[in-house]
Length: 418
Image (cartoon, rainbow, N blue to C red; front, side, top):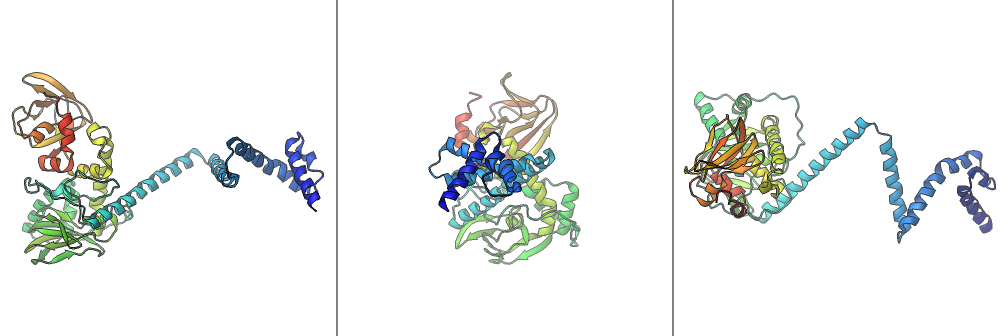
């Protein structure tokens, strides 16, 4: 009856408030095991939850209590984990977050490419070194100041795990090998490979002769190869719009191998051309891992550079792909006052100092940068920079500098020699 139910609820409530809770349950016609369960397990949870609910006073207590119970379960489970298990789970969570960010970036870049949100690069032909504009776009923020974006493809991820790998070897003449090495030397993606890895790449690549107006890859198709251009020009087409033109040394189709996503653009030759084709397995096992390690390594350095810390992840990735490492000994001159400036530098390791007219005007440590003034103003170097002890510098050429960095921002900062 209703009266008996009220009495039973009253008995449970009393049990939770008495010093000897078991005595309060005597009126209930339940077994001793159930009484013990109420006292030992149920009441402590209910008391804690009700106390928290009263403290918070949520407008709707039911969702609050459900959430509280879920959080308590997580907390209690966490207490059962050993320190090693906690570290392992924390690393797994970190890896998952990274993977989620990569997938988000893939979706963002595909949306940009589909919208044709691409600008012409005014200095596209100025530098012989055009290769750095080809890195994958794996990031979320908009890029209003960038002159070019990668259109050749697809998406960056880590789904292709490294496994037992035997590279294919396609026979080549010595002339072909030398031509291929020269072509790869122009590409940011291959130029810094170790000799052994470069030899594997050279052995695995296949020469492809392309006719005029031939479509090498087609938007929406799956991609199993990338291509490096030896000669000729190729249009990258999204929908019906040419969004970019690639030339000798440029790479296209690489993002399909990095991101495992369909081709985001059609690439068509403008005239008779020659390309070198590389398969997915060789790329993933030799090139991909090295490229990603380079990006991860420099991304942490950029966070220490005030000028670069405000760049979004896409911009930092492009910059990382374009950087070249230069090592200097103690007292070695990096650049001289009065000479024409062709490079911008960031200090990765060591110390350097700038002298103007014989007077020291600046000292540079890890994360500092210099050389931007001559590139911005097209005037001779304003100072001589010399290393103090062994140093490792990251350099970027003038064409890449103008494409990848916010020149207006640099102009505001470039008053250190004035």
